[in-house]
Length: 199
Image (cartoon, rainbow, N blue to C red):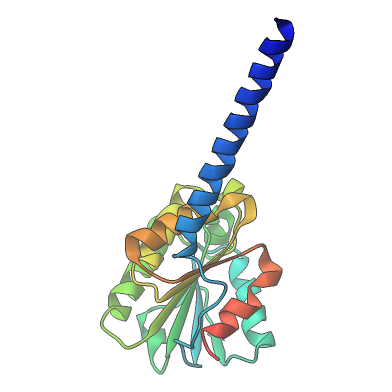
């Protein structure tokens, strides 16, 4: 009798594990139509403006990547509408940092308005928008979520890292706004998808 109960419990456990694995693979297949390893063809041109959306230091990482790839760029973490003159591509590096905003003597409201104004201007210009989110989920907050939503809405391409499972929220945004998305394991994987936007 005990042996039959034990066999039954083992059988149920195996069924539960198979159901979980089956469900996980189904989610992955659904995500695959939104997530690309990189772009199949270039969408952006040199003369790139790299700016922050939230004033995190992640912007400096993207600047270094652009320089290593020899992509002609202008690094302006607090870019304004006037800075768009002669620009072909804008890269928003998303990540809210209260410390960064304090260092630049900005409030969250001022930073949000700056991004909204830039996007308003970009909507009516032939300028490619790339959004990059390389922060991790532990540091993600409602301010970062708002900046992600703002910059992804009109993005031509979004690149993110899967630190602490950022990919779920990025895939949801890709479904909502219908943009191509690349999720890399960590910062070291950013160069290839970033280069694919230009070459």
